[in-house]
Length: 146
Image (tube, rainbow, N blue to C red; front, side, top):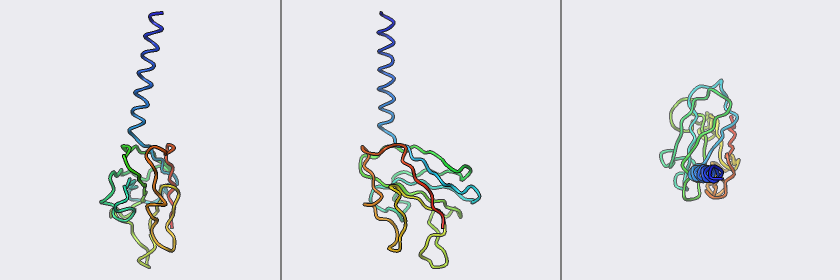
């Protein structure tokens, strides 16, 4: 009986710790990475400010190599609404490169909620935003290439 109580207590503590760790982090899975392209994959978590163009305003950024078709990254869970942008930065410029028009991106992009760039321009924060307490994990984002 004494061992059963110890085991139950230990299991309860471990479950609580697992839930606490999960409550403080967010998992993002990036799919559709073209491994034939060079450069880096930038995964950026934004509050509203700067989304999606001003990469220096991202509240957290992870850098990955495009060596597998998918990657998973962990971010610290933000306290406010947030959006995720993924850029396959082929020229390692830290910016979204454009094609000959100077308007249309020439590198792969992906956004939370599956939003895409349209003829109106970059996605709005309101379309890509997620609430930190209501995300299903992992958040899956597929990179779309031009």
